[in-house]
Image (tube, rainbow, N blue to C red; front, side, top):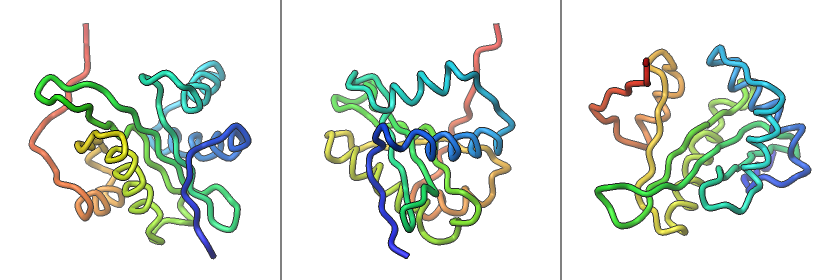
Length: 148
């Protein structure tokens, strides 16, 4: 079957919602309806601070997504790109769609003049980490979250 990766559009909302729900469930997270609505609106928005979204379809059926955004960096003149969410539904894993979504984000970053792309994944996500190890370089940084 032919796969297509393209920017999200308004008609993608039901398929995107199902995929993002799967992604959130994998990480044991839930969000309110207001967050679903706000996130999708931002994915379609025109504010440079907004998220950008890609959807992967196989045979016209949504099977994967990527959310990314651009931001300034104190050590660089050009913006950098943060790949916030990457998800391929279980039935489509191992088909190259995850790699294709990452490469599509790389291409979007290059087109925007942001050659640096980075992301986070949890240490227990061994399947995703195997892909990440093939398309990126792991760094020694440890993430901290605000606790106060």
